[in-house]
Length: 198
Image: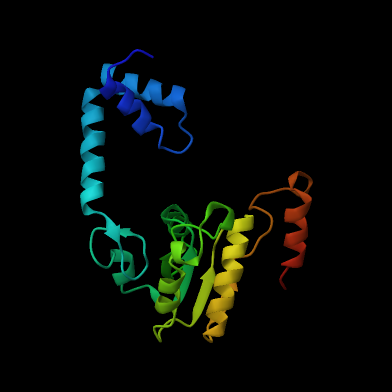
């Protein structure tokens, strides 16, 4: 494409977004420059502001504008329960489900040796420090049920148990409203193994 360097730079910058390939990035760039220059300015301003103001909460490692985020300071949360999630979006989903009233720790990733991501890259030392504050009694591991998520939960669980903490893991099973005939055999088998008394 014979385009000005600044336009090519914009396309390349948009490609850093997940799921955005060269054609999608080109369409976005054309849209912003042709039809929504105000939107482009808002996007640039919001991105610049976020880069300047967002940091990691020193307690939960989530994004925050202060040293300690408002969730960690909320008086109605149960400080004896700590839920470990992979990403800020996982924390958001837990909060939207309104199923957990404790506090959180965000790993910002999972163990993935093939990608060169080890324990130091996902803040496991900070998790251990946070969990051993004398207040936390139970750590709920809510990583995803991927190979990396399972490995991360296993590794973190071993470390936390060695510190004398109670460690639990979110359950797997059938989705709410799901029908047995439409569920894969692995999910069904896990649901049977995780059965509970009614």
